[in-house]
Image (tube, rainbow, N blue to C red):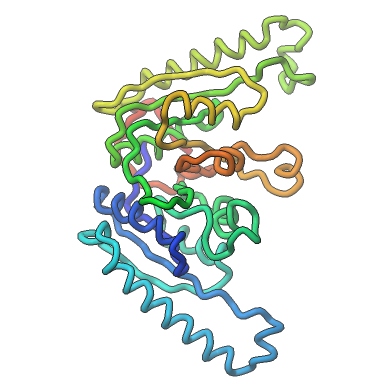
Length: 321
């Protein structure tokens, strides 16, 4: 099975940076014949402010709703890529992350397209509060675009797909779906294996002391796994390559492969680490987004369970979710 993008969401907040995602989302929606959702959020007035302004707060909220509705209507006339796309405009209310995550689930959104920095600005985390929070709340793939001075790319001829051997089919499905819409010529299936054996092994059947060639064995297994995946892919007109890299810093290695392969897009999964786990271990996806310059399609855990799909590029043997 393969992911489908029957509906695409572009969150907007009135800022030029957020609007950079609109042309990309609209172009993808038009090519996919998908419904394009343009959504803005009216966030609640802080309790302290609401207590002070009283009834005026209700009027202020209504005016904000009307202003955002006019704004969403106006952007359709300024972005040529939206012409010919079927568009649904909606203003929703609530905390931005919660409201958008609920909207994604309720509307069965297949793809979210947004920039990594919008209204919250750099006073929030590097990724921006909304994008960062949404990645951890939604089960739909999120295409993150770095703000740039020139127009955003909506074609990705070379796609790097980062795999870890745990949820490869689920990551590949949206990568291939996006590639089918963007004239992709080549895919690089990449996997980073440890350069040396860990101090402790979680696999009691393979104690480290009995495996002097542990790293070599990891490399062989990874290459064989990627070769099997590549042989199953059905991407007409596209060349599929594989690459295994031994490194301790996974994000740095992936960014190096992306540069060496002249990738236009990186696709990767995330396990959604939060709290202490994220603080201690860090997040490979976070670092790839933060330190790189390329668009990144982030596939959250369990994404494929949301999709309604056709017989897929992985063939009948593939199961996702």
